[in-house]
Length: 180
Image 1 (cartoon, one colour):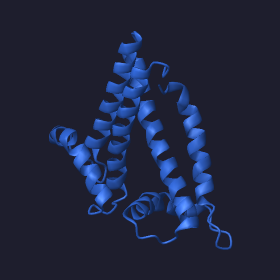
Image 2: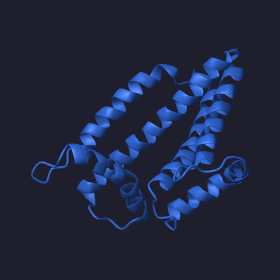
Image 3: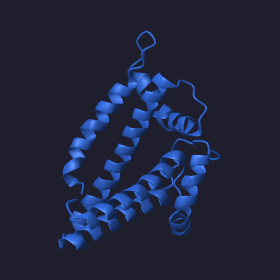
Image 4: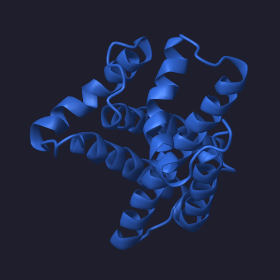
């Protein structure tokens, strides 16, 4: 699907914005530092489209449903434009499946990269005070702590990232056939 440079460029830009929207969702779910400069940039990038949706879609507890709706809209629009450019005419069910699967796939991808950065930072710069490092820690630590409840560390060696990487990889393999 990405052999056409126009499709590739559009898909890349749309996926970058989807990444930012999903990052905002994760930042709110994990209650990451709102005053972090990166968090502020994410908020500024997503507010123009998110605020009108927020008027129509209320939050459900800690879950910002407006961010989920915006992520689904961005993914749906991406798929619709790609299908239009390629001349495909899928049905409504196919749009729904590709939209939901693509959004979940990109969410798993975001966590994969955040965890990879977290693991590398733990080797190179443990306890770093850089805003990016602190944000990555705030995003990944809730996931690590859930896994540590089941799999304790072995003599100071934290195995939780390995099991999370495996789970993400397996889930992405199941979802991959439905992602454009």
